[in-house]
Length: 265
Image (tube, rainbow, N blue to C red):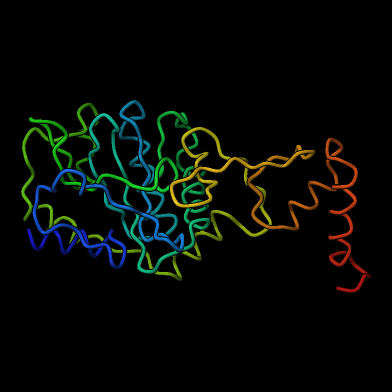
C-alpha cells in the first residue's frame, strides 16, 4: 500500500493533504479535495457518463497527447458515472485558469457530448472520490490502462478488488503537466481576447466564489452574458449592447477611451 499511496500522493494530492495510510480507504477518506483555501488547483478531472461511451474519452486522450503534446492523463473507472480523466499538474494554478483549461478541452474534443453526460472537478463539485475504492460489495473503481478502456465501455467497473501493487505500477507511468506546458496549452485553448460562451449544464459551476460555493452572476441592466476572458472584450460588448442600460454603456465607453488610437494610454 505504501507504494500506491506514494503514487497517488505524487500525482493528485495537494501539499499538506496526506492520504490515509490504510487501504481500502476509511469511510469518507476517499474524497480528494481539489481546491485549497487560496483557490489553487493541482488536479483537474473530466468525467464522461457511460452513455457517452469510450469513444470521446479516447478522442480526448489522443488530442491531449498528439495535438497538445501533453503527458497522457490517468483514467479511472467510475461505475455509474462512467470514466474519469485525471489531469495532474506539477505546480498549482488559480481556480479560474483550471476552469478555463477544462472548458477549453471540452470545447475542442468533447463538443459532441451532451452536457448531461459531462462532469468536471472542480466545477461539478470541489471534491472527487479517489480510486481505487469499492463501488459496492461486488464491484470496484480503479485506474486502468487507457489502451484497454474500450473493454469497459458497457461496465465501467471491476468485478474484484484491484491489486494495490498493480495500481501503483500503472500510476508510476503517468506524469504531471509542467507549468510552461500548461500555460502554452491554455493560450491555445483560450487565446487572449477570445470570448468564451457562457458555461452550461454540468460545467456551469465553474463560476465560483468560496470553495465549493457556486456563484450566479448578478448584473442588473446587462444582457451580454458571461464567459469573457479579459476586461476589454467585456467592456466592448457592454458598450455595443443595445439592451444594456445607458449609464452602463457610457461608463464602458469611457473606460475604453485609452485603448483607441490617437488617445493617451
